[in-house]
Each structure stands twice: as structure tokens, then as C-alpha cells.
Picture 1 (tube, protein in one colour):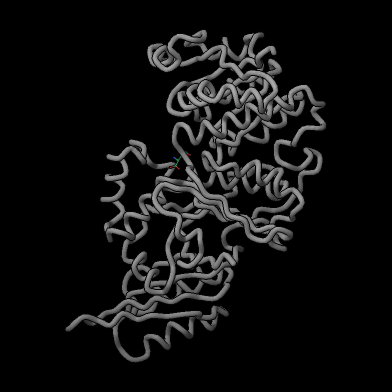
Picture 2 (picture 1 turned 45 degrees about the horizontal axis):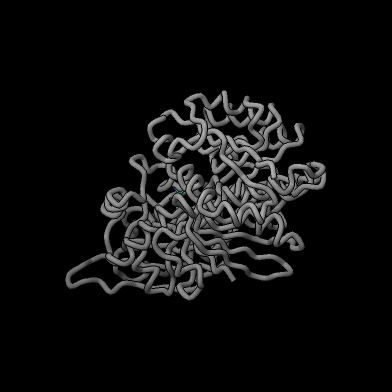
Length: 436
Ligand code: HSE
């Protein structure tokens, strides 16, 4: 059987894992795909590394553009990352009639519409299972397994670095900065961890899932993004006392007014399965009208877990590349001419529950002033704790949980509460999702 030929761009962690797994499981993968899948050429700037990983068992080059132009290559696997050269290479590969597999969430979240349109025009596939939640086959689940459903919402722990940091902050009661340094020392967090800790990486991933779930174009620019760098370990403790854990969630919801698309630290009930996803693990909770809740759990990063997804895409393409393009699974799950024009809601229009922590003077009438402001904004209180002031202390913390409220009303209430003379400093506001 004639092998299908793969040109691999980048043989770092994921590229190395792809080489290893593809070779180790070659016999079973061939039996599944119907023909051998062979990496015939690898492009990497570091030729020594490429030689070391491949043992010189395939062609090596430092010219990725030669690979995307190579007539012998059927599928290009892009594992370079970023928006720059990776975008050029992917578009060139498509122009040259090659199918593309990529783990590049940033590229697809920002330029996906352009890339999918180019692929559609050329009749080639762009597969990206590895771009979202590493080894968890969530793209397959959303696009195919759940295709009968009207998907209502998705909530995911889709960044392992931040989940590791939040787990350590809670377990050890340590501040964010200390745990971040530890995460860097252990190799979880990058030297520049900005995309992870500020929620950008999670926003790339939830943007892609949102597009597939609701059949809308990819709209990263409309996502509301907050990371965990400002999170105080004290709020993790108070949340725990109230029966909640704080996780960095990517959330997308269909509402009558439009689609919610947001990433932020979120209180979730400690009893939910997803609240117990710890360390660097990922999990995605999907709510469909027919199936109800489904939960997908696994490693969101790493050489072989991510390679597992890259190779799943290679097998899919090998099986489907001779099919009429109209009979393949559409890139965004819905037929390209059937994408909906649903509006992505600005954060002020989002409805959720809130955790509010404020530092107040411990004297009569303070609580009444605060609850009056909340009542005026139609905000209903669900739970409340007041920390008993320490001996001789004049101030204390009040923590309130609200029922479902529109964010702009909470913003208005926060401004008024912060202007009360009995309230010191800034009010801390976190969002809360019951996920039921
Ligand atoms: N940096 C990501 C994480 C993995 O920490 O989960 C790749 O998307």
C-alpha cells in the first residue's frame, strides 16, 4: 500500500512526540487508516535536533517553505506556532493543495476564518484537534459525537499552567507570584507565561470551541479575557468556606440575546466533578439539549498527549482525502454557507452570579447601606459571610454571593459601594457559575 506522505514543520516537543508515536504504533495506525502514514520530510531550524529525534530516517531541511511546496508531500503538519511564519506556511500549503494539521490555536483563533475559507476554496482539510485541550478529543466530540444536539454551553479548564497554579495556591495557601515561579522551575509555565496566566491561551481555545458549537465565525477579538495574575489567595480561601473552588474557565453560552464568550477566574461548586480537576490537567464540560451534560478529561499538553491528537487528524485525513470535499466534516462543524450571524455579547450584557468581597468599617448601618445599593440595582443576595474582626481591629471583610445578575448592574453597584465612606479600598469581584 502506498503511504501517505507527511511534511512535518517543527520537531520540538509535540513534533518529537508525533514522530515517536507514529513510529511506535505504525502497524495499528496503518490498520486503522487503511495505508501507512509516513513522515517523509521534517523541517526545523535546528537540524541537529531533527537528526537526533528522527535518527536520520527521513529527509531533513531547515527550509519549511520547500516542504509546503514539495509535490511529494500530501499533508503538512504545522507545529511551529505563532501568527507570523506559521500563517504564511499554512496558507502556502493550502494554495499548493495540501491538507494541513495544526496545533496552533493562536493562529486559528485569530486568522481561522481566512484559513478555513482558503481551504474550502481549494478543497483541502485543515484539522486542529491538537489545538484545543491537547490530548482530549474535544473537537471530534463537538463536531461529530454531539452533532445531534443544540449545544447550550461549554465550560472548560483548558489551560494546564493556570490550573496547576490555582491548585498549588489552594493546597499550600501560597500567593500567585510564588507559585508562578515554582511552575516555571518545574517547566509547566513558559519563561514568558503571559498568554497562559492572562487567559489568552484559554481564550484562543474557547473561541474555537464556540465557533464549532454554535456554527459562528471565529471571533477571538470579541472574547472577554481575564487571567489569574490578580487573584488573591485569600479569595480562594473564602470561596472554599462558601463551598466553591476557583478555576480559570473558558465559557461560551448561547443566550436569547447572543453568544457569551469569556475567560476569567470563576467560582464553581466544589461538589462538581470539574471542580476536582487538579494540577495541569484539562477538562471540558459540554451541555447539549439531547445528551445533557458530558465531561471530557485528560492531559491538555505534553509531547505524546498532543501527538495523540495530531495523529488522529492524520488518520482522519488519510481516510477522507479521496472523498468529495462536500462529504467531509466541515471545518467549523456547520456547512460553510450555514454559519450563523449570532452576536457575541459584550461583557456588560453577560448574566452570571457574582462573588463580592469588600473591606468595611465594623459599625452599625454598614451592611444596610451596602444591601440598599444592591437592592436598588435589582441584585439579589444568595449567601454572605462576615469575618469576625480580630481583637482591636476596626475593619472587617464582607463576602457576598449574588443570584443571577447582568454584569452592567453589578458594575454600577460596585461603583456606588466603593464610594461609601465606610468601604475601604477596592471591591473584589469574581464571577460564579453553578454549572448545572
Ligand atoms: N500552555 C498550555 C497550557 C498548553 O498550559 O495548558 C498548550 O496550549
